[in-house]
Image (cartoon, rainbow, N blue to C red; front, side, top):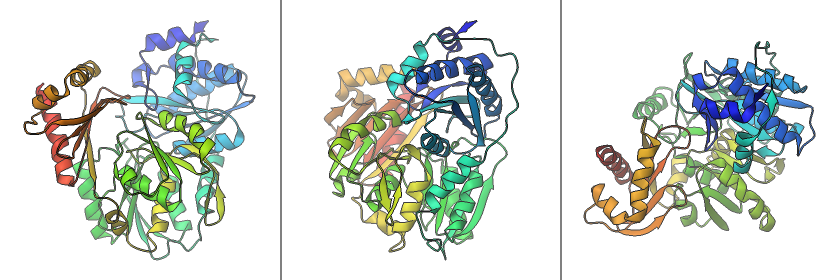
Length: 472
């Protein structure tokens, strides 16, 4: 017999900001089974269920990992519902309606040589406390020696599509030409029918048989140019895409310019008349500056921290939501859209903010909706394959002596106005700019976020800081 905590520890897999992540070779069949046994036995202490749902993204390593997960569930004597390749929020939504736990096999936006597991309780995302419980559990299980065949159910895909198409008039998008950048997104087979059901003319763009690690928070220059070219070539009103597992949106306006995720989230929350928001510390300060919300609370980066704020906010307010700088929108309470109730979905979702933006854009173009917001611009990028130990050393030095770090980063005539260590090191500077350094929770990467009154200035800050960091 194997013990889950021993197998997990020896695998080297750790929890990041969004699930357990590691190299593909670390996710052996027994490592996958160890996580499943630890998770499910923990859930059985608090919930009654006989089924467990599983889905995957389009990574080449995901099917075999799913087979190992299914085998582990079967070892526990539970029934498995396998939904195949669907977006993470589709899996989470249907499982919450069925009141059963679920597991998504995905590495989200990280490169294809890595993968991961996301876990959902019957009532939503697991917490940081749940993560520690999984790592420390001592569940016993038999070694995985054979992998079962998987039979796909289309229930989740159907219900997720109906969740959104039922909110709007079937003619809402008549006259709109919408491009869908499909690449290897796990929702690519759902999005075209969804937009068509609302009346849009849909053009499918660049479907890929190879996994494409789209990071909605650090859009490549290549993808920026692609969107502008597509917009002109196909006369598009809107471009929609997501990251690998379909929980983070990437949308472009009438000019083919990608919107920052937090600006999209702001516009969605405003269109839904949300009262209060929970957002990570890295999000644009235009959220508070626009004056459209009764209260905004700032959290650490990662959806579990946003979700953790919902309970407290729901005690005082009836309408609660959150979103991240990567665009994922979390609906913390039931809401009404067009006098129809949409159930809470307290996990990142890509479709709701896209459709709410399109609904708001019936009155005026998307770019004008953006122009009406306080003109604060953000940019972010990352250094890949940058040891976490190096990142932490830089941050520690900056926390002790922020002015000294500022000088090392090339800022000579600027001073530090305030320091925020909610998550990483966030420096508000005397020239009204913000520089924020933070190690990724999912991979050996150092991220830099910047905010300024001009986009060019924000981009220059990120480029300069990351270049200086590499010299350090």
